[in-house]
Image 1 (cartoon, each protein chain N blue to C red):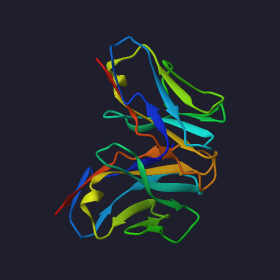
Image 2: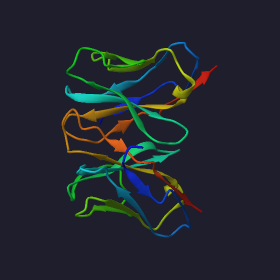
Image 3: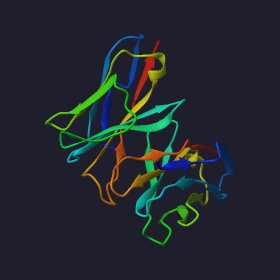
Image 4: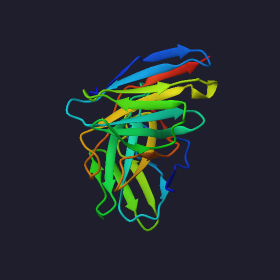
Length: 114
Length: 115
């Protein structure tokens, strides 16, 4: 069975600085997708970024980028120029290519200080 | 606003009771998913429906059941409620099933409190 591990329960960053959230996963599959979701205090789950495992190029969405290391089964999220609105819980998630079921990590709470 | 609606927003009930949570997917989406977010279990997948048919099942208890209706809205029924069922229940929807670009859009959740 696939598992997703987020080893940092909490992280903090100064406004305008850069922070990296870690995620590792375990799978025997070769084809899958990885996601980072943001859950602000409103509890709404918002997709931040997606990575297809067959793509070597790391995904980027504005200030958000990932470092995808397939061999190491690592999928970290880098937030550049952090903003107060980035404060939230961040969940890493895995999806097999042949299902739609998302498997989530335990989350990292990110605090952003002015 | 994701376009997925869930009712009610909050639900408070007693142990042993039965409740129904309702979800309306985004217009045009055929797949509906239910997830449970609790302090003990984290965020976990319960069940998926695609165009009215059950597509995938996760860690859903036998006391829980779901269905998707012809108009594509879905209901999650929770019965014989226990204290441990207190959680935030999310519904998500997507256009299809499978494929790389099958993004799931999450609703705002229903907060269930069992006293």
